[in-house]
Length: 376
Image (cartoon, rainbow, N blue to C red; front, side, top):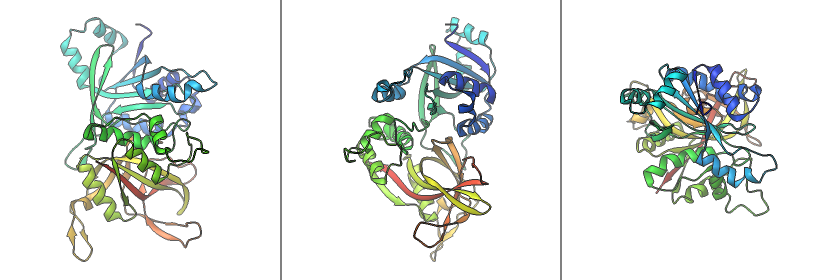
């Protein structure tokens, strides 16, 4: 049992070390991931104090991907993961060992449950190491709302723990296509709501490519088309409701309506890196809308009718972004950027901020393109 776990005081350096050890990768791989930069601020907001590293953890989603892809690869990939648990109070290795030796201590068990912040599964892969992640959200209030969350149970050496969250993971670029992680988080939201099977990333990729010509590779590293994402939704007996997201009024009203109804929304965006006021196209992307914030004091009158819509108070969107982290902030600040589409005249588009770290420019902004809403 001594080697089965490690208790460490939380710090971003301790988190990086445990990620590196769990995935058996170099410090460079961990340090250059946007996730570690995002986790720094996220765990500060959650006031994390202690990490418990659980060795030899079997994760169902990774095991499905392992059986569907990695077991057939030439390299000898490991099939067991490491799971990191986070708590908002301080305790030592001996304190935790004593708790395991006396599981009848109800007061101590209650403290562990109350202070539990969630977990991160570390996958033993060369690059995409952030597996199934369920972390407590930012504090909810009258303005900030996370309606897509559900309760996840974790058993830590016999200690029952629960966290209210929505599952997240980094996109595996080898065994899954772009947008697969966003769809996977969507299905974790609709699975309990509409009572359907929650497929693994490999299963989602296969379902999305049912009607792709057989000459194409089944595990794609390129973008999924809207048709393929819609097909993945139909594979779990849901119908995709397609909405164009370029109009800010439509974007806010659609997001507010379905998120308040506890239905997650897959948001397709175009990413632009801003450098000295110029927008450079950085590719298409998909995120799962999971929450919002109504920070504006009053609704804004719309159009000639001056209709007052509560959704117009929305100024922030929270989304599972597989390249950043869970509940990543996107600010609807109304900033318009000039884009230059191929073979088309320049146009101004309303954009959102992102939590992406720019490679060369000042910031990375997102231009909303489409929304896919999974409905029965």
